Each structure stands twice: as structure tokens, then as C-alpha cells.
Length: 157
Image 1 (cartoon, one colour):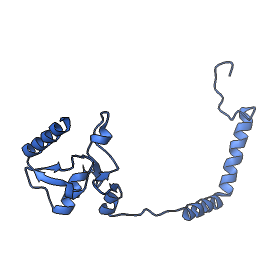
Image 2 (cartoon, helix red, strand yellow):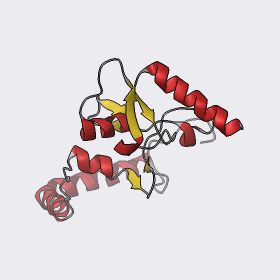
Image 3 (cartoon, one colour):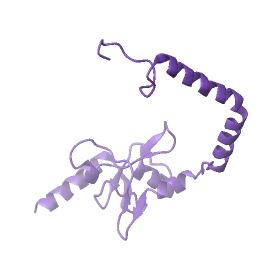
Image 4 (cartoon, one colour):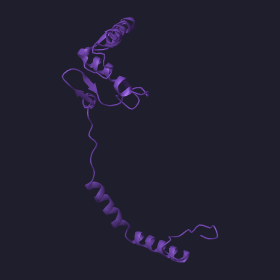
């Protein structure tokens, strides 16, 4: 308003008294029709209720994989915040809200069992997003670094 005070009523109503009268009218209608309003609300919710579909962990995982002829590429969450991470990052999969694992590790463990202690997974195809178990092998960290360097050097030549 011109004097700097704010109105506490609807701008369509010209006075605070009319706004209060409208509020009282709405409260009275709701008090008189409360059961009808709640019944309508319940019927609407019941008619539009869609039960949550519980899918197995395997179904959720494979729904996020694009199975091509070569690599099976992870389509969901990818690690890394730097430029180009979508192409270079590893996939992440939430088994539960607090148990998040790398997608290729989960895939390997489902196919071959637990990864032996002290070993890491090497992507034979050199595609970090690949979750195809046939493209993964358990190796030592030194073997993994050596294989990666051979790959990088072969790309430069």
C-alpha cells in the first residue's frame, strides 16, 4: 500500500471485514461438508492409487544396461565430475539407498562370485561403462596399470 503496510486480506476484497467474512463463510462450509469433502478426497485417492512395484535388484540393474553386440553399456549414474566423465567414468548402482556399488563390480560378482581379495577388475575392452562380465577379469593392480599403459601406448602409435 502507499503507506508501506501490507494487506492481510485478498486483494479482490476491498476491506479486511469482507475478507474475514469470506474466511468465515469458507470455514462454515467446510465444517458443514467435512464428511463429504473427506469422502470425495478418499474416493479420488483410491481411484488414482498406483501401488509401488517392487522389482528385484537384478531387474533394476539390467534395466539400466544397454546390451549391444559388443559392450553392455551402463546407462544410469556415472562417476566423475570433470568434463567428458560421461564417456570415461564408471557406473554406479544403488542396491539400497545406503549401499552403492560400482556397476561393473556388481555384474562381475553376479556372474563369477566375489572378487578375490587383493585383486581389481580390468576392463578388457577398455570401456569403463561396460558391465559385460566377459569383458572383465580379476587382476592385480600392477597388471591393471601395465595393461592400461600398453593400451594407451598402442593408441598413440
